[in-house]
Length: 509
Ligand code: HEM
Image 1 (tube, rainbow, N blue to C red):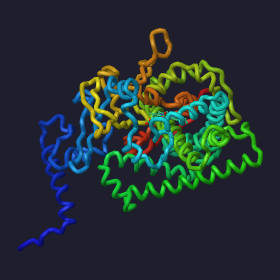
Image 2 (image 1 turned 90 degrees about the vertical axis):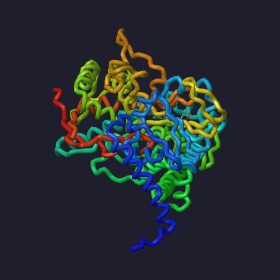
Image 3 (image 1 turned 45 degrees about the vertical axis):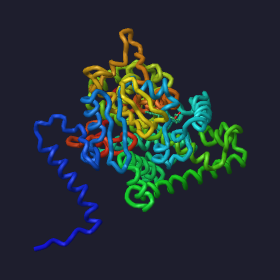
């Protein structure tokens, strides 16, 4: 029997299939190949097959490669894509790119395109556009009035939303997704800080909040854009299909929420509401005579601040709780430290602490830093290259390359953090005299390093400490047996299956 000839579409699909099959055969049937995760370069498709096979386990895969290749790898995509990504977690390269030769490593055009949903906001800006936004954001975020508001709001949110939610779950014997609780908490807090609006995302009914859902959808699509050749995701965007359709919908939902809130704030200002009544960042921007307050600027600024503060803090908090379920020794040491603090008791018999007292704790700070080191909420950073440059590792980067810095991998390098690098050990942050130990930010990269260091680090620690202390003191969690914890495909390091736990009230009386 003669087979009919293949149509062009069938041909288009069959070539990659054959290549993938060959890759699979070569790689996974070779039992002697103990470095089977190191990408193989194929003609035409480059290293894409390795990426496709390992995408489900992206961070772990990249980490293994960087461990055997001595911190650095040049990833080359399919020939037609022009994709050349230098992947590194070498602290010396990082210090060079983020600080000493900062001007040569902007975010770059490609980053700008991938993160188009952020508009011209601070994350997506370089040079003067970035500098002026940073100066303004720094002024507002570091203002004592705003700091005091963060502390007061963090405490209030925990008391009024987290404690009732966990009490209800404990009394009913419910299994809950603790990550969802953390993300809802930080969504509510950040929306209030940025927009002055309380979306009430964390309440017993666990409502679906369209703005929150839209942000999640946007973040996971941005991850896929990193892994796909430019031409492919741009084509999907043009056709408005697959993940790009999801992103376009999310974009619309986010814009609608922001537009409505800006109009509401402007109306309140017209009614004569004072700054003291509106301590949120949006109101401060609207009031500021130095900044351009057209809606597009306010939209880009607030969306960037939402992204900066919401998922990062929520994800950091949930990995911290997960690490405690695996490390009861650390949990006990945190409880011992909390026992030394003054406390107040709510009408429901729950213990709460003052943020100023929590700020002084050494072990709690060390444990949170250790969680942020092992599970950095921003697991990778992205840089463009302006001029050809030789990195301290000896590698030469050129303008057609992209640089990907794996923060997740950095934490797991013996050459950086020692033989026990993969262990959760808050003690590594405490010096012999019992004080917190300084670690350079090009090594502890979770809050970035150099001129683009995170502006919200102190705010984040205030929120994290307030929630962590109160939750750990009043409740304990048992991880649900068999529940798999693994990173989700997103530009923020979340758990893809959530964190399912049983909640128990502590009996501390
Ligand atoms: C645990 C929580 C947080 C972590 C791990 C974190 C981490 C980071 C990282 C890695 C960057 C650099 C991103 C990049 O340029 O690609 C960054 C930038 C930034 N963060 Fe945070 N962040 C956290 C919380 C916050 C909070 C609560 C705020 C305040 C609303 C904030 C405000 C900012 C801003 C404005 C930038 C841009 C800095 C610039 O480009 O000059 N962050 N953060």
